[in-house]
Length: 471
Image 1 (cartoon, one colour):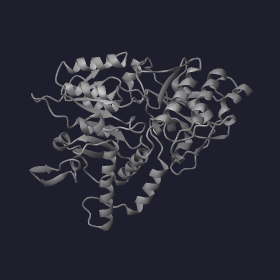
Image 2 (tube, one colour):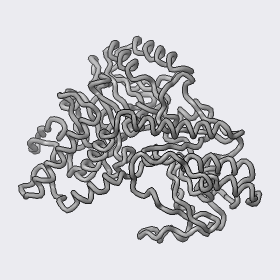
Image 3 (cartoon, rainbow, N blue to C red):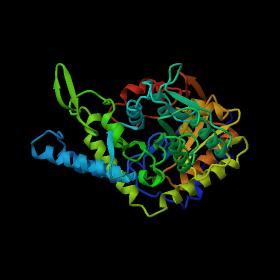
Image 4 (cartoon, rainbow, N blue to C red):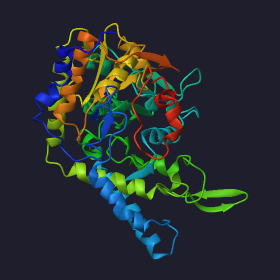
């Protein structure tokens, strides 16, 4: 490996010489966190991994701290704080529903995350007239959370439709397939977690409803980046996660039409979901209680509601404009580096959100990501992003690198990434790297762990910190 040259140093410090003029849109917790580099210095962490989990808004953290002293049981408690928490929980439900433009008769279920929401929905799709499972149509470009719940394999209830080379051709393919048999549901992403692209929802809804099918939107990557309305779009169900919506406190939501939710199989069997239980029969509640057995995540719901309120209060177009500046800056910067290619699903897609995936020709994505972290304090994601069929379709079956932005991202982080990649391809990394248990790690890494209780066990081996999953 080449040693660091003076020219290399100039490249990687460009952000310090000319700081970015594009500030964050909202304050997030941890924006000033310093991380150690392999050269013994520290750097403000450049978080470009919002698509995986976004940091908490400072307003969300403050709201949780405000409510924590009031925490108590909900729904069945006579105590004063139980009454307060019940009111907070139900008010949060209303806020979350309002954030996604719920219709008057829609219902909002508080879940753990998008995956939980879509699994819930998969369990309540009505059977066909002949008693067979209700058919679901999905595209092969979906996140696994919107593929696996519907039932894949020989006995699957889902038809997985290959995406076409253009948006227009994919919509035609969708319409053609819906004409072949009765479908109960079409499940699509509101924005790809790999490229930020999406099919136009108005067209998907029009095509699906004309064929008698409902539409569910995996909005995990949509609602943190763009306004969305069930009433305005006529989408039937929407699922999203708090941890991607600046409220990482363990709550998500499924919001949509009441009839399936009132009559479908309860998502969990347990207390709170029932009206009466005897040894020979059970009477279940209607939604939302029907699907919220056990003690609900009050703090998670309150946190998600606060994030929804903060995002909804932004001036019209401010969020999209902020991300468009960052995304354009990133894509243009990457396009100027020989050997780096930004991947796209469709050449005719428009208005992608702030998620950009790219490849570096001849270089392992895991090595590039490890280099960016160890030598520049940049956090990106590498792998297949829980979208294995899509990565194969895009010609990157071994994985790629993803950079994603959000309300807490400043232009400096984008500039730092572009400069660091330029330096990597120009002069190579300074440290030596090797693969340990499937993860690229720094050889003889001397970076200290942050002083946080619970990290002591990791001090013995840095390899444990990279995690066991290949995605």
